[in-house]
Image (tube, rainbow, N blue to C red):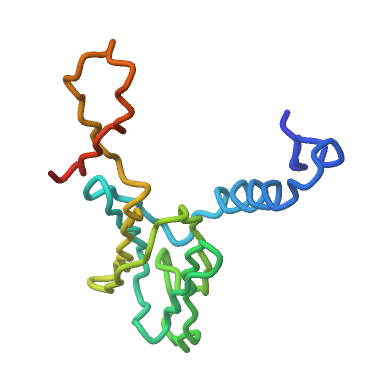
Length: 157
């Protein structure tokens, strides 16, 4: 049986509190399934987070990025329905979802259509972090006077 408490002894890891806090946040958030969501990889550098939020409109939704965490919050006033439901499966309760973003991931836009909120994400690597091709020189390796540095080629070249 797995305990609800965190399994690692924090006192054995000094200075890692932020990592343990993040792991606990992720573990707690994994249990929350409302609203249902998808994470879609649309290319090598782009993703979409889709949330099914029937009954919400853009004025009910707040999207914020802070400290590499994407927060999506939904809050709408309760409907004063006089209907007697036989089954009520569409929830309109408030919610908060958060997604940890990598260091170079940016939110590039959001769209709400047909009850699906789509948040577009893009990984934007700085030039110095992008892969580079190294040109192989065809010089004689026995030439001890050669101090030439290898030429770097940009992958786009």
